[in-house]
Amino acid sequence: MASAKIQKTIARQQEKISEGQFYEAHQQLRVIASRYVKSESWDAAIDLLYGGALALLKAGQGGSGGDLAIFFVDVLGKAGKGVGVGEKSKLLTILRAFPTREPTKKRFVTDMISWSSRVGEYPLGDPELHHVAGSIFAEECEPYDAERHLALGTKDSPEQLAKCEFEWYSQDEPNTAALYAARAIFPYLLVGNLRSANKAHLIFTSCLNSSNKSVSVQEVSSKSSDMRVYPILPLLNFLGLLLLAIPRGGSDLYKQLARHYAPHVKEVGVWDDALAQIGEMYFGIKIPRQGNPLFDMMGSMMGFGGGSPKPKPKKVDVPPPPAADLD
Image 1 (cartoon, rainbow, N blue to C red):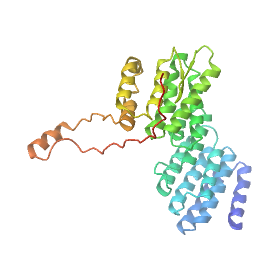
Image 2 (tube, rainbow, N blue to C red):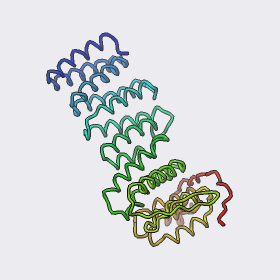
Image 3 (cartoon, one colour):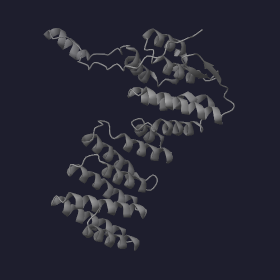
Image 4 (tube, rainbow, N blue to C red):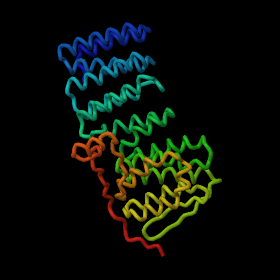
C-alpha cells in the first residue's frame, strides 16, 4: 500500500484532474516520479506512477495516462521487480483502465510483455498478461493484436481466440470459414500447443454449427475419435484431419493428407509456410533450406564446406492416441 505521503500527492493531483487541469497534473506527477527514480526510491515512484496513471486514464486522458503507465513499466524494470502477484495486479488494473482504442495502450502492452519476458519464467512473456491483453483487443475488434497475445496466453485463451475469429468470419462469406479457423489453430500448433489448437477448433466449429444453419455438417465417429465433416468446406475438414493426424505422427499419413487437399490449399496461397513448419515439427518432414550461394562458392574454394549453419528444428513429441478402429 502507498505511503501517506504518496497518497497525499496523488490526492492533490486528483483534485487538479477533477478540475480539468490534466496537463498540469500529468507534468507534476512525472517530475515527482523522476525525482524518486533519481534517488532510487523505487517503491515511491511505482506507487505514484500507478496512482497517477489510473487517475488520468479514468478521467479519459489516454495520452497522458498512457505516458505514466509506460513510465510505470520502465520503473518496474529499473527497480528489478519480478513478475509477482502485486506487480501483475497493478499492470492489469492499468490495462483495463485504458480507453477503447487508445494508441498508447499498444505500447504499454508491448513494454509490459517485454518486461515480463526479461524478469519472469516465460521467455515469450507471462501467459496471464498475454491472455488479458488479447481478450481486451478481441473485445475491441482488434483481431491481429488479439491473435498475437492469445496464442501465448492461458488455457482459457483458445476459447477467446476462436470466438474472436468466428466473429470476424461472420462478416465474410460462408465458404471462408477455414481461413478464420486456421488463424485460431495454426498459432497454437506453431508454439507446440496441440491441446489449445484442438480446443480452438472445437469452439470455432461449435459456433459455426449453432449460428450458420446453411452449412451442413456430418458427425463421423470411431472408437478413437470423433470429427465433424463439412461437405462444402473441404479446408475445414483438412484442419480437422490434420489435428487427428498429429498424435499419430506418421509422415506418410501427413503426406497423403497434404496431397489430397493440395488443390484447395493452393487456392488459399498463404498456408504453405505454416504447414511446412507443422510438417517438420510434428511429422519430421524436413523443410528444404537454401544456402547462401556466395557463401557456398567461397566454402568450396576455401575448403570449409558451403551453406550457412542452421539450428536443428525441434520435433514436438505428442503422446500417441489410442489404437484406431477404422472399420
